[in-house]
Image (tube, rainbow, N blue to C red; front, side, top):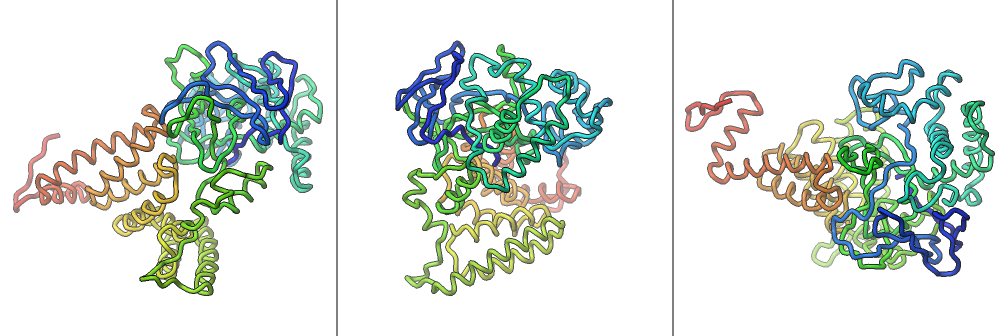
Length: 514
C-alpha cells in the first residue's frame, strides 16, 4: 500500500490558520466545524497527531468520508483507465490536445476539465507527461493555488502541516526525490505561480508516506494514487478498529464534494467507544510482527509499538509447524522447507509474470507436497502457495482442485485475520465463487454468505463489490434450493448450462421458457 499518516514524532505542528491544529503537551484540540463528522484531532503522544471519535460508533458505520485533494492514474495504466473516474475502459476516449489523458467518454472528459486543463497545457508544451509523482505534486499545487490549502470546512489539516520525513530518508531515496524535483521544474509552466524548492520537496515527501492507492471500479486492481488530508491524520495499528475503502461518489448527495468518484470512507470494524482513537493498518497483517515493523519503519519511518507487535500476537500461528500426535518436525527440516518455500515463491512469481500459468501450478503442487508434512495450516508460506494455486487454477478453469486449495486458504486466514478484515472478506468471496464454478453449491453459498457479512461492514451496501456479491448470493441461494429439492435435476441443469446442451431428467428433455 502507498498510504500513510501524518507523524511528527512527539511534536504537534502549529499553524496560524484558524483551521490548523495549534496545541502543546498532551492537550487535545477539537475541530468542530459545520457539517463535520464526529471526530476530533488530538495529540497522540509519541505518534504525533491523531483522530478520535466524539461519539460511539458501531460496526459498519462510516466515521467520515473524504474526496481526494488530488489524484492521478499510474503511468503503467494511463492508456487503460479513465483519468476522471478511474474506471478501467476497453476503448477509452483520448484527449485530443495533450494526447495523454484518457476518459470513459466526453461526459467524464468535461467533468475532469477543470482539473486537467493546466496539466493538459503543460504536457503539450514539453511533449510528454512526467511520472505519476510529478503529475500528482503539480495537481496538488494547482489545487492549492486555486482553492488555497483548505478545500472544504470539513478538512482538518492543511498540507503544510503533514509530515514529509525528508530528514529520515536514505541517501538513495533523497537522490531519487531530487530527480523528481528537477523533473517537476521542467514540467511546471512558467506562467504558473513560482514555487520554492523546499516546498516542492516537502510535497514529494508527503505523497511518499501519505499517498493512498486508488482501485478500479471493482476494487480488484490499484490504478492510481491520491492524497486525502483527513485520512493522513489516522494513525496505524496492526489490529485496527477501522478500515479504509474507496467508494464511488454519490451523485445525489446535497454536498457536491461527495459527487467525486475518488472518495474514501473510513468505516468502523466494530464498536468504537466515545473518545477512542481511530486506527487503520498501513500494511497487511499477514506478516510476522518483526516483518511488519520492518516494513513500517522502511515506508513510514516509525517503530510500531502496537500490542500485536510488542507481544508477537499470532506469530506462533503464522510460523506453525505440523504436530502429529505430539511429534513435530525437527528445526533442520523446518528450515530446509522454509528455504525451499522462499525460493519456490520467487520462481512462482517469475513464471506468473511471464504468463506461464501451467508452470505456476506445477511449482505450487511441488511446494505443497513438501510443505504439507511440515507446516501447520496457518503457516504463511503454506498460505501464500495455496492462495496462488487456487487463483491460477481458477483462471485455468480447473475449479475442483482450486476449490480445495481455496477452502484450506480460508480456514487459515480465518484464524489469523481480524473477523471483519476486508482482505479476509475478499478471499472468502473468491473462494465462494470458485466453489460455485466447481458445482459445490452448498459450500459455495455458505462462503458467499460469510463474505457478504464481512463486506457489508467493510464496504457498505452500495459499493459495487457488495452489489455484485448480493447478486451472486441470490443466485446461489436459488441454486441451493433446487439442489436440495432434487439433486439430479440440479446436476442436469448445471451440466446443460455449462455445455449448452438440452436439459435432461430421467431420459427426457426438460423444457424451459425464455
